[in-house]
Image (tube, rainbow, N blue to C red):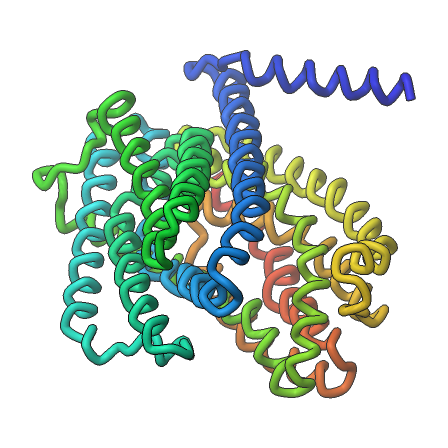
Length: 467
């Protein structure tokens, strides 16, 4: 026990030193140290923001469920679930900005940096305006209460107003997403995490106030959706006024050529997003169609346990994306190679033991969590454990490919993987049951992700050395 305390103390001391030791940007070693410091800051801030979000969830779920009742609460959750669909509304432009801006910052090219931010911002403004006009024109034909199966006439009217509030907040916040992507590209993702945490706290305060004032569903939606909007505006002020006024969006900085570059990269990211969503979000539909809705509940609840394995590691991997792009533009190729190798080793060191532990503990964890409502077969547990362990490859390699701009390769590989995933999931589910959707994902990733990467990544490094 004493040895464990000593090791923990040493680890904390090492992290603390890394957080406080700024690197000299004039040397390769100094730049490597600064990247390490910012990755740690971003990971810790993301973890803190997630903790605040979970705390807010733990407080608001029982409170609002009791206040609204099952029907109105379910309608609220149905409205909130639209965020997953609407996440495609930016057409990948935010991700495209990350690559362009981080590369420009690595080169010290201020002109390209401010053009990239302005182009992304005004294109997203245009997207918001087009979507707003389309909604206004078609609104009278969109009977949200009927679509969401609200029972009473009063509830249907309330749902329509709540949906209008939700969509207005979303469209207003779409151009503000440039702020989060801007902080990420500048390797200051910890700042966007701080504002996301602030948004969660403001949302919690707003929901508590609405419940106390006995407000309706529309006011709850305004509190939950409007609070992140306020936090986003504060983030915009921090980025564009306090820290980088040179990046403040201006029409004179926008250009057709710069817009096309951001749009080109954004389009590739959009294809990747859609392919990944199709590959991994269709499992429930496959199970419901072949085995019935009960199998979906068993699969979804069990999967939530294993999703926590790659989720935490992602805090450390995501900040590597802009770091790779910046390092490559500066010619720090040795750091890129070294960091990819370390991130893969970290992935296996974290994911494999965690997946094994959850595999053995899952029956007890599920019994404590949901009682006897979910009893997954052993093959499902084994398949999910293997899937979680193999994410040791997906995350590190994905961030590396994003950072070095290998987007066309990813778009092709992910599209092929999505098609194969769906076909194999159907095939295996019909023969092996509920675990078939997971086995389909594993085989599809092996064929169109892992094996091609064994050939593509070494060739990519050779091209980088010759550049």
